[in-house]
Image 1 (cartoon, rainbow over the protein chains, first blue to last red):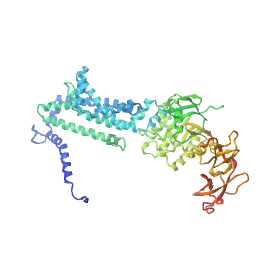
Image 2 (cartoon, rainbow over the protein chains, first blue to last red):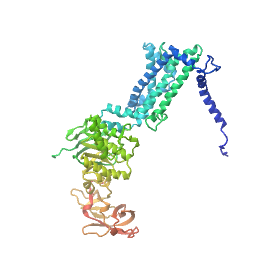
Image 3 (cartoon, rainbow over the protein chains, first blue to last red):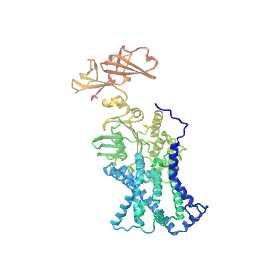
Image 4 (cartoon, helix red, strand yellow):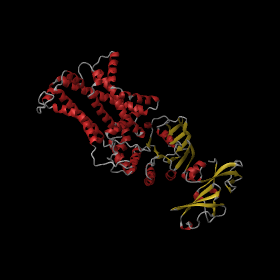
Amino acid sequence: MRRAFSRRRKPWFAIAVTVAFFGMLYLPIVVVALFSLNSQKSLTVFKGFSLRWYRAFFADHDLIGSLGFSLRISAVAMIGSIVLGVALALGIVRSRGKLGSAAGLVLLIPLITPEIVTGVASAMLFKGVGLPLSSGTVMLAEVTFSISYVTVILRSRVAALNPEVEEAAMDLGCSRFQAVRLVTLPALLPAILASAILIFAMVFDDFVLAYFTTGVTPQPLPVRIYSAIRFGVQPTINAVGTLMLIGSIALIGLALLVPRLFGRRESLSQLL
Amino acid sequence: MSETSAVRLDGITKSFGSSVAVDDVTLDIRPGEFFAMLGPSGCGKTTSLRMIAGFADPDSGSVLLGGEDVTYLPPNKRNVNTVFQSYAVFEHLSVADNVAFGLKRRGVPRDERRERVGRMLDLVQLTGMANRRPRTLSGGQRQRVALARALVNRPKVLLLDEPLAALDLKLRRQMQVELKQIQREVGVTFVFVTHDQDEALTMSDRLAVMNGGRVAQVGTPEDVYERPADAFVAGFIGTSNVMTGTYADGRLTLPGGVSLPVPSRLGLAAGSRVGAAVRPEKIWLSDFEDGMVQIRGTLRETVYSGATTTYLVEIAPGVQLSVLEQNIDRSRREERWTGGEIIDLAWKPEHCLLLCETA
């Protein structure tokens, strides 16, 4: 016999699991943010509010240099992977041969390969071809790694495009290339912007791949933070972490906003 | 012919893989004509249209526009424009920018562009919608945008690929009339693809009926309706009663031994299986005249549909004729029969067509 499910009784167990889940997820971040405002150097006792660690961060040319470097890597990875990833998505969807579907499958491998494997493999590749690790190699690795994400996001959007729209553009006097530029790319713009922001945010705080493929100096910010922590945690790192968090939240918010800016119903989650 | 055809398809053939979509089609479409290509899906009408537009290359044969061979010219080098089945409106552009798109590509100056777009929007009754976004428009309005966007370029030929298929019935009827008026006004040659025989008959000056990649018949709506070339055309255009039987000496013998006179045809061997077709509205139920073909049958069904009544009469085992009567006062006879009676029907000999091939 089945018992009637009582709606009045609170599902305490479910609530407890949920609270524990969110606690595990966000409490450490809250602690980092809080202690970034600590007036003392202690990482265990909160003494009062102060912005001294933020001032210390902005005074630290080394850290600022790393921040600038990370922003540059992200920008290059974003632009490079968008250009190549969008072109690849168009190619895969439009090609009728076996090459296209094969490329579509191969594309998924970077998404499931453990990043540490990608990182070590990339480092070995660069060494093997005699390319010294530098700012160039880390950018090359990040662009390559990001293309899969862009293409996977864009592919379904390209497939959903009405082929008659591009034909209409050609009918009205466009060459094939002009039709893509004037009609297809604008139709894909929301998805392109959303994936650009996503790539920027992902690459900006990427540690593993950056660690294995970057040169000695400058170091990307996450790598720099990691090496700093090895010599004992400085409260400055809390400030850096909090700033990165704010930046990431802002970017994700922007990504969520993009489709609305275009007045479309589709949201980021649908784009992904 | 002194006049150059607006469009000439000369023996074009196109296959996709092993299936032949268009099979040796030759057509001449006259300047200023409203020409329909009619047929069931897969008959090759859309593929033919795409070859005129330049979206597909024929495997053999040639496409001429105003006498000029354009067979392998890309779409942007042809003076034709297309109204697509899906409308293919550019969602990221306003209504006015959609309509101005082709003019802009061709470098028409801004002032002239604006003036022509304005006039075109008036013509398709979208005045005041210039700054609207396509997604805020109804299906009918989007269709008008697509039409204006194509016509504003003053093409030699306008190609329309089932432009009304996505509209509901009432709007479709309204757009049929409007399209025809617009075509008269601008005088552009319209080539219109449709699977709707009503649409083709009411709108076109001439039409080609296509079947299996071939042209079954070309002619005016009256030609095609009154004098269908074969069983397919007779069955596809309007409704026809096709009676299949054995031919001998100007008579057709139906199953069960019923025999009726049909137009005789020289060279048709006695004993050939042929079909004879009579339109439902050409069959009379009363007031017969001399010289009519009379036959007797059993009334099986009476279907009343407002303006008309359809009677299903079995004249031989398995051979039913449908008979259409207008419900004008004189012939309103639903009380006349209850069903199952033996009744007389008749048609004039010239309304019975012998079909070359049996279906």
